[in-house]
Amino acid sequence: MKIVFQHSGILPVLKYGGIERILFWHMKELAKRGHKVVLFGHPKSQVADLGIELIPMPETLEEFEEQIPDDADLLHLTYNFEAKKKEIPTLINIQGNGQIGESFSLNTVFVSKKHAENHGSSSFVYNAVDLEEYPFEDRPWDCRDLLFLAKGSWSVKNLKDCIWLAKKTRKFLHIAGGKSWLPSRYIKSYGMVGGDKKMELLKKTDALLFPVRWHEPFGIAIIEAMAHGSPVFGSQYGSLPELINDSCGKTFSSKEELRGHLDHCLTYKRKEIRSYIEESFSIKRLTNDYLSLYERIISGESLNSQRPTWKLAQPPLELLDF
Image (cartoon, rainbow, N blue to C red):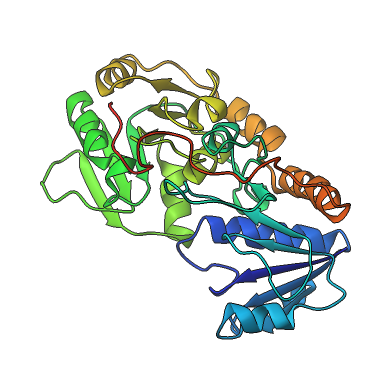
């Protein structure tokens, strides 16, 4: 099978990046299995040694469409686009929430069951991690050092309540992705991090706080933390109840309820959490799922019976109660 991808940034990602890493890992896994993989991307991307053909991305989408190889079997994109000049089967993977009134392709794939349902769809593939990049070391469970790993300036990620929780429970919060401007002995801010620094924080913290206040499509930080054997404590919105079970964390309806759990934190077994990720969120599983969808699309089947669109009354970024 010959699959074409497009991404404008340099791959592999050297520092910050979530969706970009998943796309790269998937392409690498496809090439490893003998598929022909073509990337329209940044000319500085280092993918040739992995068996991925790199074509510099032209300036416009019209030029990109014209340059898609005639023998390509499928186009896999991460944004809402439909070819007009060439008839080529196309899969659209949407990682974020659509806007009210926005319409997506019939072959759109979401990243969790709830994410799909919120857009009137049942088509989804869970995100994944390349476990070779997340080496596991079993460590004692302490629940002393907490991690916030998200874009702190984005209010729906709820850094504010994470800081409140750390101060109230007298635990240490390590903020990766933002800053706390109020001094506290319990808060350590690192700004936007990626690469080795992010891995260092994942390895030295005990649990991830993820009390989002929106319908979270997936939350890649959740499976990154779990890959290191850390439980995740979050809200009950979006995909979180799907991803977090009692052996690897818990979801809560309010910050007060979450605080009570942190005050009397149960014992979690890091090896069990790692095993859960290995079984459910490996890049090999993701590639298997996408290959099944590729075959359906190439055979002429549509993944959705009607165009997906945001189905909820409130805008996606409206703050939800917590």
